[in-house]
Length: 283
Image 1 (cartoon, helix red, strand yellow):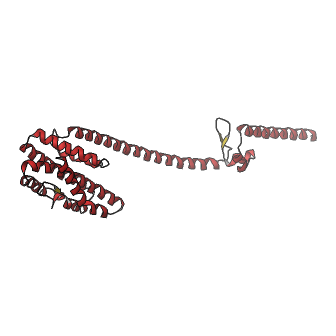
Image 2: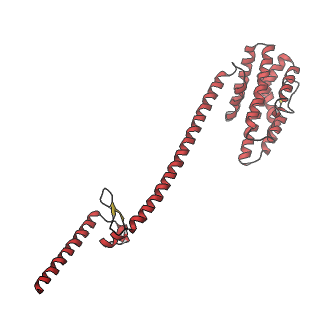
Image 3: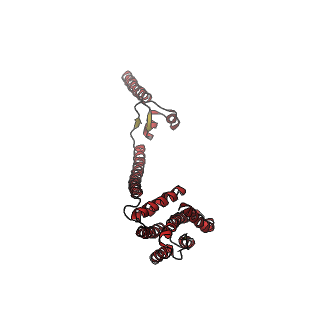
């Protein structure tokens, strides 16, 4: 049975190879190539399973199932099964290249999951639901192993009937929940970052305005850190203490300012006393 599956895989790959090569470049081309690979993998899965189904039902019933799906899904227009039940997907690949890339993946998933579901039902009726389930799951796992980098492959399980690949559905559901949670947290974090940036900008503007105002005050004003290093001097402080901007850049300690101020006051007091003595002497 799986030798038939392998033959179907080669037929699918050889059919879409030229389209993969000609897929356009850039971000849009990357999406298109991902969609094409998804179609290739899903077609491979359908081909394997429909070939097995045909051995039990003949080709007419699978073709009828496909015909019903074609009327509902544009992705499958023009597709067909050959006499052995292998799925000829060249038209599906061509249809994908003409679609809106933002909506193509859900359309691909819905089309192939419905086709798979109908074939599973058909095969189950011809053999047994248990055999149909086991055969499809074997085909699914075999194809999944051959496309390990195709993240979209598990999407097909969304539309499969209950009891088919339930473990895959559960894992996919948890992954989606986690991705949604991460996406939500990322949006919330981005909003907080934007709010913080606005706040920082507002503080920067306010600080600049406040600094300009302090600089223009006639009273000496300075700011120092815990080590006593002067971090700010307004213009009046520069004039009062006699320090130039170059001195400030070199570093000034608060004790230097205090000693300068004490010396200035002492000098001022001495001058007063001297003047007073001279005044007394003249009199």
